[in-house]
Length: 258
Ligand SMILES: [Zn+2]
Ligand SMILES: [Zn+2]
Image 1 (cartoon, rainbow, N blue to C red):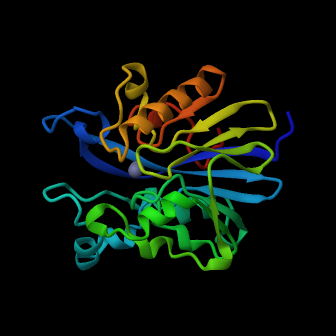
Image 2 (cartoon, rainbow, N blue to C red):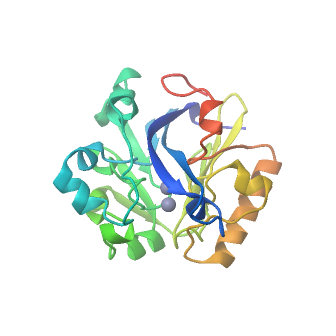
């Protein structure tokens, strides 16, 4: 199969400490877990592609900014981004500098996915139209930081439904967690296939036990999107889960490539 994608890397960009109710529908508030926040890098014939913007560590380290940008969960610990987790230094260690990134794809616009969206001055930023319309009205108290995705109009690409970024990179409209969520199906030149699930579900337990995610704007859509990703994985794509505390410890991470 023709593909423009030479390599794919997973970058561990921080952690969030959340109750099971956030990851698993009906999961309750007794048990908590620390889940990773990931970004992805693709080395393609059309430049470097970054998927997800992660968390902005600057907003977490300054007390005033933290209060202003992460007030949405009273009593919750704020997310953690250590120096080892920072996105831009991890990219630099792979010799990828911001101006070399040609495309940024966001699965959705929650604040743990948008932190560094504006860090890539040459990149087109790709979002679903429905997500854009929904999220740009919302506030940090609702889990969104619109200023992080206030992309100049000439670099913003809004999409409706499934679309193809380049040979080997297909975006699948997978709403339900949010109204305009999309997942990324990647076919590498060596024939391996991956599905960057985004937040359709948090981890492999959702899939194994058929548990919907905790956070949903539409349970019917969320169920359909979960079934869609299951079919794609059954068809031979390896699912990469963005908030999976176990899988992140089992797969090669940047600066290694998958
Ligand atoms: Zn989310
Ligand atoms: Zn998330």
